[in-house]
Length: 181
Image 1 (cartoon, rainbow, N blue to C red):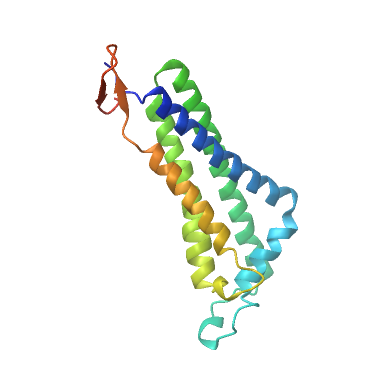
Image 2 (image 1 turned 60 degrees about the vertical axis):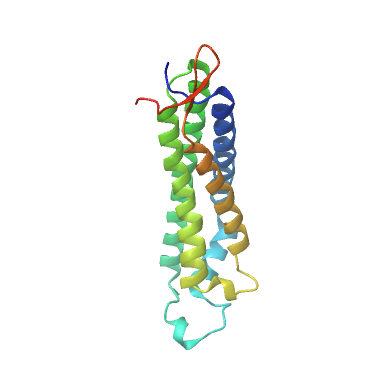
């Protein structure tokens, strides 16, 4: 008996991974094709120009548009890389479902892409943007709710992606065992 996820588990993981892949691909595409909209968002957050102007915090502000734009380009590059990993992971899941093999590779690639999204939205937007640059203080340039939704969705998908494989034997019995790489 080989250890592979049940068909339902694999299909669920493929669909959920594909959902996050679609989302982050559209985010990257939007940031590339409508560069100026979120460029302004990043500039305002980093400049802290709509926060409470507390002298104890304002030293953190990044006022250089060159540095602001470099940060924005880095964000877009990170989003694009995560999207490509998740698209590839989704394709590997679909192939693994067809072949009933290769689930570990799909799981590893999916985990890498999902962690990239979590790092960007969790550490980047919630942690650095929200706390370091006090984005929570801004009425106009506060992306914490959106970032929290992405972290929640992606975190759930990561949990599903990392669920132990459930092997189904020829007699229909279920046995949990790890798949060999």
